[in-house]
Length: 441
Image (cartoon, rainbow, N blue to C red; front, side, top):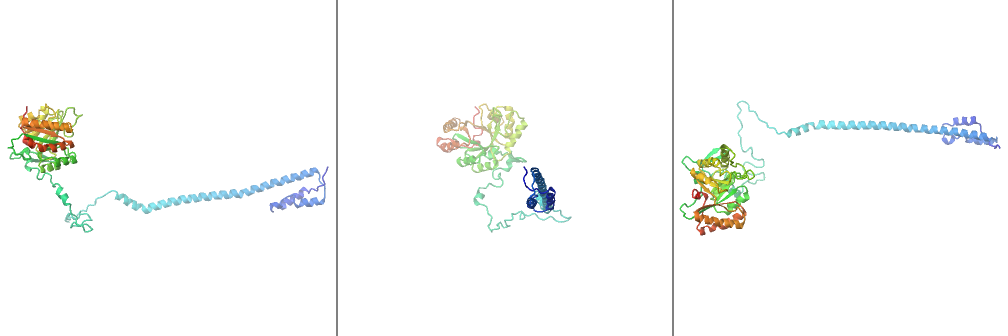
């Protein structure tokens, strides 16, 4: 069956389409007004002709797709342009940064060089011309900028020292008033004691006053190992009477100052002489220890090292030495040197087998030895027991020596006990008053 629909001719449609190619898309419909006109003609079309019309419509759709593709081309072009512009801007930014760095270096190079040179101190020396006199050196030039020559500061205050500080300050020469120059051999390392040209000896000249006509039994108390702790040494100087003998460690800092202070308070002074003990080196007395394994020259050098530490002492007190003092070959040269130096030898008697007192007597070296360690056990009960023993030994033998450490409990007990000796008929004496008085048996 055929439908009476008029179909426009294909050639007419194509011609109109070409003419309207540049118009608005809504006006490019190939089936627009022509379709109405053709329909108005009333010419019937067949079913096949209708299919031909559908095919014409399909051709028009493909052309629309071509138009969309053409619209995408400007977009891709603008993207490429944007990428190129961005790359150019990035390059310009990098070049600008490098230029800023180079410019900063150029401006600040001189300042950086000056700052670096300031870290290396230099000394400028003026070279005098021939015949030109050198300028006078003046302490005024070295005076701080904040202090004028008259001792006034910029605020007008006068700089003065604390009167108390002046009173307590030690003399500039620690040997002044403490050491007799005639009894000293000056060396590069320090003063060595010596017998004076007229025969005077240090152990006599530096001894503390004592009434040699006093017939009471004599007891000497020695407190050793001093000078290592300033607080402890100060406590000893403040607490104990001048009749007590003080012995200072040979390695104590400011040893000469301590000896000078002790002497001014009336104390007789010794220096500790470390000697090799049994069990050395597990038990080590410290620096300058005299050793049985060392040569005679080495031991005498160490002895001199101890003696040079200060001046104004009467002699040396052996510390430890339970191995050294039983070795006559090692000990004899040491004792002979002490005799030649005019010193007193005090044996700590850390062993009952010590040969020190006997060898000293053989060469007529003034000597004394310890009878009791007062605080070998630093407890109140043990100390009281040893002090009682010392009283008995003193009364029986008429001369005795007790050796103590500067423990607080020892100082407390000695402070209370020493004043009682007079009532017990015992004279508290310096160590020099016991020299050569004790029996060797």
